[in-house]
Image 1 (cartoon, helix red, strand yellow):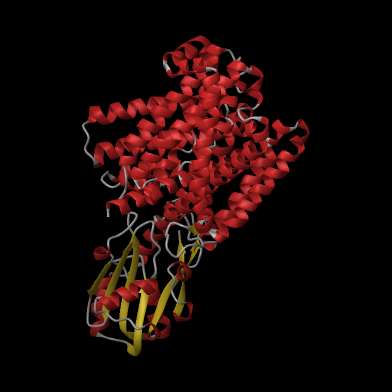
Image 2 (spheres, one colour):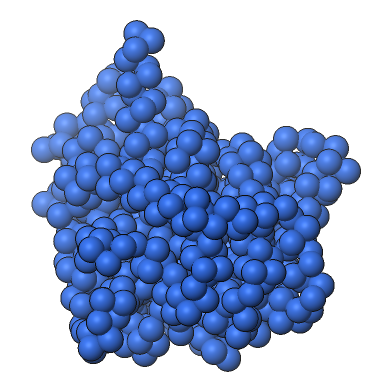
Length: 621
């Protein structure tokens, strides 16, 4: 048993290498170069020591301490990520505070989508730019090769990551091993570069170069891209494999490579044009370009899959319209494909690549998305530590201030890049934030209007039982989101058909603020009268609601619902914008447009279409 557990842990650790660390693992391709080039910092030994020290200690403080030691503790029943953290943080707060937390979390999620667009673009471009090291004449092929790789990557998404995912871990293990070997080779030739381990060099660099050194932090943060993935993918692998992979292979490989690039620059300052690929001997350049391209594809795959997962969580938590979700694996629930998100990301990535053309130009856009998400994570972590875990205020505040100062410094250092490309993730973030917040506000306003028009349920049932209309055989299931008012579909059915089925079931499918709901908490069946029943089914935000599954659970509970004897009634609302207080007119129109383009409830809840009756209703916002 112990050997089996060790094998399982080793397998998870290897898998975590492939999925979790793809993004941060490709950062050496461009980070050190950008630190010098972005601010025209001379490649002198003192500057090399200072920048290397900043990179190394940023990896220690932000990744090793903040994320690995602290943030990974903030799991929502084993799940991580900005949505899970938001759900956790808003659990025990007041309504006003809860809404602020939601807005903060939504903007963090919106910035993640910006990251999901920029990561494939900058990573694949930086790998393709290795061809320029082989020959300057190959510069014209960089952009077509990058576009071809990206199009191929997105075209493969519909097949799922199950088969390709088996290669991710071994490829990234080879990648980090080679990063370390190439770096170590240069360090042995220039061991003086290890002086940069002393954090004093970072302070000297910041003091000597002043404002220019502060702006260099905007490039140093590129070494931390993908740190959020440690937390976001916690539910897939668990804390221990992620921590082991980081300390055993990822951190040593990254540190050795960065120091190796620094050693190369001490020997040959002209290597700053591409210090990563110039670490390799001439005969290894082509294999390194191929391996780097594979690594960047893996990094891109991880963030694309993350965008799918985040979108599904947003849908189930009520922050996004229903979209088509296809499962690509029979065993892994987390392996999904969302056509709309896939093609939207591809179009956005291609526009970004063809607009910015080089990884250096895109590096300016990268920092804002990364640092913004990191800062929001820190703020939400404080709420969880203080409210959920009941940490003493001095402890929670002290840790938050420490991380917050670092995050704010990185964010502020990137603000000046807004005009040079930093506007990109901010604009994308604001657009996505507007869409998500409009959908959430619009749904709340819609439910409020429906409640205003709804009849009291208990009185309605008593009246029907006392003076029953004509009855027909079978069972009618009315899908409803409210527990108190009479469903509109039920009223319309009585009004137009003037009949009532022998058994009437009011079914509500609710998504909780937890990733998974325990089996014993899944279903609640209550008989409300001689012919009326209420069925409440609860799902987590990482689970897929399924009405047929609910019917099977009802059968096991002794409440038999025979499919061929059951009809499902749904209300299809036509929403009309008005001048009534609630939302701005333009947001009401936006909400109406989103509603019209949302996936049908019957498809989303997997209701058999040949058993469905839809009844229309007009609702004025």
